[in-house]
Image (cartoon, rainbow, N blue to C red; front, top):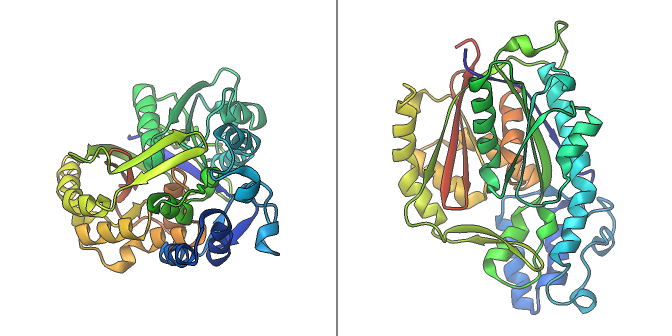
Length: 376
């Protein structure tokens, strides 16, 4: 039997901000003219986001300029905002709590004791410290002090897919392994002040969240007594990766003196439209699956143009990407946890057939995973 996905869980910071309010707040930090304010408002409106959660928020309502203390006006902190060191201190304050909340949910759905986890795979591209939130998971779930740890860093929005590949490899190598994957991203800590189109697009899209997954060899990893949260296991059939030729500069994520900075070429949607279907057709054929046989698609919503490019490349009806669009609308782009939020919505109903997960990241890289109902 293939390795199976037994459980999944998500977590959000307690406070959120609507997109119109986020645009209003951004204008204070980023705009130096009425023309820039108009352009910023248009970017935020076109992002496909209605609301986003952030760890910097102290409240979800009231005057916009009084909801958070972290980002101050240029006159007080300079033209670039907080230093990267200050932003990383904030990451350390919040990452562990979100990680534990998501992992507790995933373990409950999986009906797996935390003490039985043998491998912990942590994922983030938005904050680094050592010891990190892996230690929070060990201490607070609690996991065994002897759990094996693997950290995947700076993989970007498809990080959960890379983590699933690692988890699947562990379980294939030794069926006794039980793997907890945990993704935490606090993208709102990398808000940029300087007026550049790519940075303003990132400001309009990214948000905070956490997600966790439990992977094991079979249902025997579960408790003997069923939980009301339990769901049918899903087989992890395989994974694939494709670096699109000549796109090294199309998407980037780099550490700056004042946060991490996103680079996003306007050519990315065109590259996806050109490359995605031919590669997917070839990759799926290796598992005896035709594109038309795929019943569910969990596509990472990097932004509206990314999803439009996928729809055009794959000739999808609008309904196929509804879950991706709804997660983008409700939560924004949380980077690596986002795909698990989409899975959670898809798994609310029994799977009707194969499911393909898709994500895009620096490179430009396409990552994919193939899942099927455990009875198939």
